[in-house]
Length: 455
Image 1 (cartoon, rainbow, N blue to C red):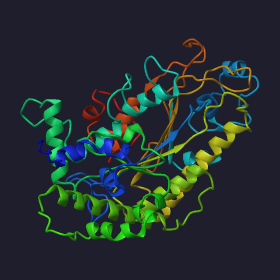
Image 2: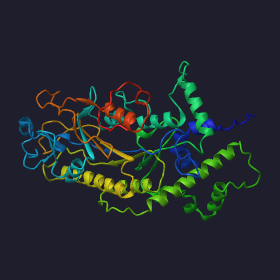
Image 3: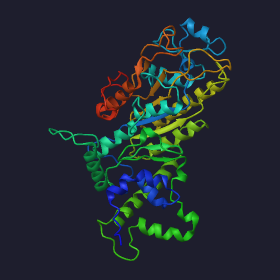
């Protein structure tokens, strides 16, 4: 007869992705625990010595935003020759002070207001070598910060490094092997599960690859009401056993503090408390009226969690619909509506942070997986391209237009040649804002841009 092996804490933590994918077979409280190992008394906490004063909010513009009609090179005649039907006329483009010949789409009045108030930075011509025009492959590249699109998410690596020490060699000694690092970090995560883990929060059906680390896993939900234990909805009799576990009450025999059962009880309690904290936080009504679009809903939830004092350091939200192959429009149309939704939602978010007194704590970064081709297509739209602008918002940014606009004459088979590697922007965010080592997290050396104020 084979003796069953025990399910260790290390095996439990290491298999969290498997547990999450087996949601039909695994009790929901265990599934939630795999994603929510943190302090049951203080919410989502950070590791000792890691400041939780600074927050990063990432806005993903899914589908490939047309950068040329977003940041408009109205001073370049080639732009109008390439886009006779959809180009933004110079008279319609919103001019940006300090930038000759560059404006923004007329639907982005909210962005221009933030720009004029010193709260917005535009980074032009962002991309990477040998660009890929597949939505999935390019998004994986951006989310892993690796042009081979392999490995963990860049924000996941940030959490692993800051919260569990994964990827950091010991001072004065040779770096440990990846296997040894994973083992040490897993043991650290196990022993500190109630006090140090700081998962990010993503609003959406699934957590983005960018947030997936080896040790720390993100929390992801579409609405706060769905982020709860649903067993009692199946049958009322399931409520009492779950509540007994969460209250640390043994059912039949006393549970040893160092046992696997005790570990599951602790993580169950952590998941339940986190769920209650998040749902209570989101229930707070913001002081600012957010637009009724999907991004506005997501950023409203994020603002409420920040206001409630959750110590999460990274939030991730998504606006889709930017794959404008047809009927893109110029000053009006689908693309105009998308840009209006994007900028009004971010403006409301900034206004809410100011009303809370949190405007100095939160940096918002927006990106898309690629831009569009220079020339319009026969359907009044644009096809998959390469380089595109990124945006940074907050009181800590150096406002203005950063970098030169890509040439419209020196093209790569009809596409823009990027001028700034997106990992240089990531490096600035990590080094200058999050106070983390971009070299360790990005697994390479990338020179940051002067887009974040010192201090």
